[in-house]
Length: 403
Ligand SMILES: Cc1cc2nc3c(=O)[nH]c(=O)nc-3n(C[C@H](O)[C@H](O)[C@H](O)COP(=O)(O)OP(=O)(O)OC[C@H]3O[C@@H](n4cnc5c(N)ncnc54)[C@H](O)[C@@H]3O)c2cc1C
Image (cartoon, rainbow, N blue to C red; front, side, top):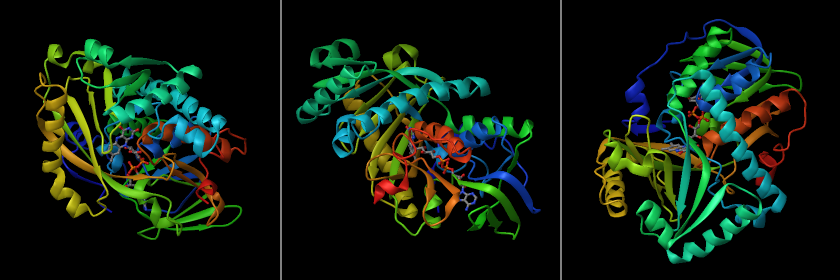
């Protein structure tokens, strides 16, 4: 599967940061993690730092999958509103999901600061109503979040104009959010793990999984066998190949990065993420070196060749939208790209065992717009499952909820 097209900025900027060996001999370990993107890296780090003997394998160079195409806005706001989650499930579930994501931002911050030099920065997130109809929905959402003491502020049309110079009926400002270079974070995390004894292999494709109630054996494309007590399948949007049940819908998303912009022009965008309620939506964030990252224009294309052909046209559309919203800003595309991503029916991820494999194979499918935040949550959740401890998110992120 071709996960990305065009010129994903992180891959261009950082290049191939580290080379890891290929796996060419059988091995045994406690936990084998399949996939060295941000999800596999965070899970492996969580396990290794708590005494588990972990091995990581990836069929590409590490972090070269969706992680290198991600725009990496880190938000506690799930793309499904809390009030909609409460309707689908119940209040307690909505609260659990939102509070967990809030906590995850802080946890990613801790990992990023321990790893260092990954362009992590705390910021605010402005979510504006794209039209009057959405304004009412946002108002209900704000009321729910304020009642449950989330760090939010309501801005009416005048306040949005005064404080941000934007024309929009209303907005919710969330004061907890962050941004990071996801490719750099995953790569540096894996490199740090390798230095402290975790084996990491790239260009090593897993082609079969055989699980018993007590262990699991994986085989690679070159016939090497990996035996473990548990396997964590963190193979991103390619994980569907292991499951007969269809668990998510693949889509394409588009993004571009501008050249560095003068700090005065960037203004509040230097420390605020911006996104809107319309679908397909527009979102913006900046980077540590003052570039503007613009994304959105999602569509249902699941055929890479068609997605590839659209990259430049989509980037031009995104740029037009930015110009309309922020006429003073000269933010032309310097690098444009597209990436596959997957969505579940409720916008929540899937972590844990699947009936097709039993207890020794744990999936880590950080699907949805908040994928990286979910990856962080999944790390704690899967460690609890491997250590046979209960965890509050086990049921909420389980496959069973898909029916
Ligand atoms: C354009 C775009 C914008 C996004 N924006 C955001 C955002 O703003 N905020 C956010 O939180 N999330 C965002 N996401 C989602 C986020 O990027 C993903 O959730 C995240 O990158 C998934 O990481 P992963 O490690 O699960 O998958 P990947 O990075 O794809 O890693 C999986 C790895 O598994 C490997 N693999 C697959 N099959 C095998 C196999 N059989 N054997 C060995 N290795 C295998 C692959 O080579 C790959 O490296 C965005 C995604 C895209 C595409």
